[in-house]
Length: 228
Image 1 (cartoon, rainbow, N blue to C red):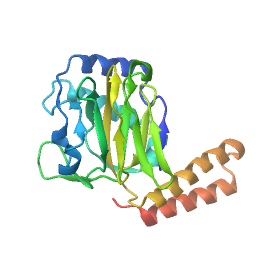
Image 2 (image 1 turned 90 degrees about the horizontal axis):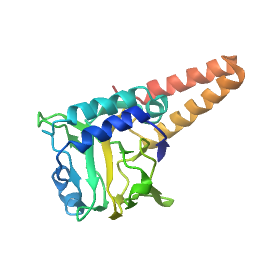
Image 3 (image 1 turned 45 degrees about the vertical axis):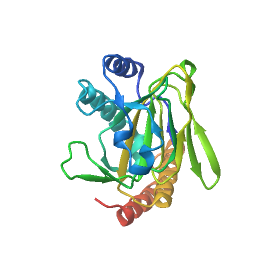
Image 4 (image 1 turned 90 degrees about the vertical axis):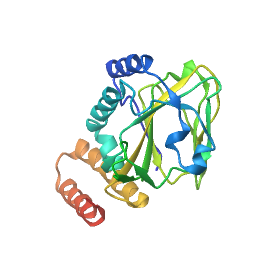
């Protein structure tokens, strides 16, 4: 499932993130990719010792924590600490690749997160750069994603995907890897669709008998499929 969440960051948070990023130093991005992906990755990234990285990560976590749509779609069990990258100048693209299934948490303490879902949070206005389209392949073809600043896209980590070359300006974003409580993407999609339908049912009928029974079915399916 490819899903976008508009305005995950509010204007104040977006301004705060940009201020912190403007005062940060960047380094080569390939060191966080797998062996194959590193050969196709040509961008910059905030290093783990960047001064403002902890504050940026807290800002993103707070936005994720208040988004009911994010929780419903991802059902997150673990979130690898968010990373931040930049595409501009001669470091401007990331060729087609697939994200590693297991991601080592920063700090090298031997803690791994299974990457079920990948996410990109756009921090640059799309009018400020040309190119930089996130292109995600699935069974129905290629999908190009270029969102307003502050908006997020979720997509399966198993997807082959790329970022097209940035030919003008710079594209700054946050990217994340999530381990879901529900490993199977088809099951996650069914639960998300049911949850969204339940919201509409409650809005129209309140806590009717049908809404209560369907809510019970949702949670029983979640009990059946979830890992914790």
